[in-house]
Structure formats: structure tokens, C-alpha cells
Image (cartoon, rainbow, N blue to C red; front, top):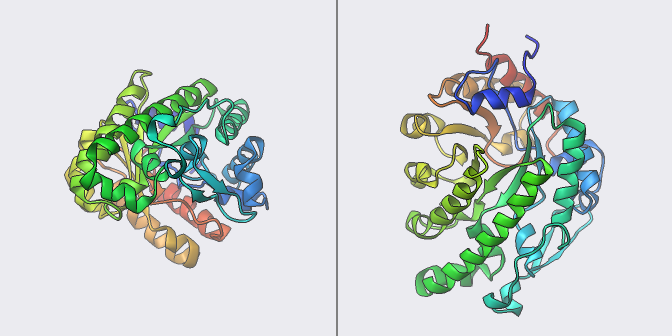
Length: 343
């Protein structure tokens, strides 16, 4: 069947608890878009127009339902003073965390219009919005305070401080929250929809206890801020999330994007409280075949599309940069074929 709604209309129905024509399809096509334009990664994440043009090219090639403005989770930390290296064909690599050079009180809240690579995001949002904003949601990945806090610090030291120096952690997280709010404000003003990403808060990195004590409260504060704009907010946590699934409704997120977790168990546990997004294994997109992907995505969507609050077919994490195009095409086509509600 041909699509009946635009991606923006489809997403709009989902968030007002109405069934769209089919489930939304939003694989996390981020830096992979650079390969669609045969673009060096450094040229992608340092130039907003390049980022937007690559995202639009990927959307046209694969036919999914969202543009994704994102490079890597260190972008706020870099704007606050962390030092990154820009390889030509890889994502930015952190070399010196800001708190290695300065004290927390010396860090300032960056201006997204002028500081480091934050203007790249705003330029990309504005270009994409002018081109397709009336038809396609423009998702902008904003690092959550816990993830930014760790990127401001030596990771091992930061994790030890969660045990030994909770007051210092709270100070780091409070400043990271202020920086995230500032970026969210400018993101919304430019036409983007913030999606909060907190990969360093997954159970692959920290304990459920640490998540509940430190990461969750600051996710909630950021999400509550966004609710002032009457937005439905997506929270994405890649990595292992099984031990914290039951805590996710406490974030106040409206949609939860999950990775390494049983979707059937998640549907049973929280689908009446949150709209679910996920969670196809990205390693399959990199290394499997279109036939296998078609079969597995068909089963995933068939199992998940009738989740009580709604469902978006997506990958569990970012689509690998070098994933074969035919594998992404198989993913999207299988999700479209299986995801129809109006038949």
C-alpha cells in the first residue's frame, strides 16, 4: 500500500493517542546519512548544511519517517570546555575532559548560537525545517545531564564520585542540565523536536541504583521543562535497559526508545504508560542479509505494533555508518508492509 499520511501527520496522530495509517518507522539514521551523500564524516558533523542535506538524501533513499540531527553525545560537553579531535572518517574523539582543566564553578553555560559545534545543529535544523518541516518530524538528539556530566569528567573518576562524592556529582549534573535546557530552547526555536539521549545512564554502564539516584531525576527535570512547550518527549537509552524498565515511566517521558531489552516483556510491563520505540539489533543491519532482516523486522513489528499506547518501529541504537543500503531498505520496507493499521 502507498502511504496515506505524511510522516509529520503520522507522528502527530500517534502523540494524541490516535492510530495513524501505519506505525511510524524511525530507524536511528544519524551519521550513516553521510555515507548516502558519499561525504566524509568530519564534513558531516562540522557543517550544518551538510548534515541536513545528508539527512534529506537518506530520507529520500530509505523512505523512513524522521530526520535525525545528531553527531555524538559529547557535543554539549565540548561546548563547555572538553577537547575533542575530529578524524576525517570517524566521529569526534574526546581527548581532554573539561573538568581536567577547570573546576565546575568555572564552567559556563554555552550559547548554542556561537559556541563550538552547537551552531552546526541549529544550522542543520533550520535547513531541514525550511526544506521539509511541514512534512517530516525533525528529531534533534540532546545529551541528557548524566551523559554530559560523564563527558565533562574522567569517566572512571565520575563513576567513583557517584559513590564517594555525591554532592560534586549533583553540581556537575545541575550545570549539565542548565546547558541542555539552553540547547533545547534554541532547538525548538529553530524548528526541531528534542529527543533526550542518555546512553551513559544505561545498565551497561551504571547500576540501577545509580540510575535512580542520579540519571533519572535529571532526565525528569529536562523532560518536565520540555513539557512546558506542550511537547511529547522521546527518551532514548541505548545499551542494556532490562534492569531499569520499570523505572522509565518515572522519567515523565511520553515515548521511550529502548535497545537491549525484550520487547515482549517491555510491552507487558510499561506499554500502558509509554509509547514504545525500538528495538532492532543494529549489528544485524551491519552484517546480516536483506532476507534475514525482512523476516526479523516483520516479526518485530507484528509483535509490537499494537502496544497499548502506540509503537514506532526503530533500531535499538544508531544505524552503523557502513551498514549496507540494501539492509536499511529491507528494514523500512518490511516495517511498512507489516505496520499497517488501516487495511
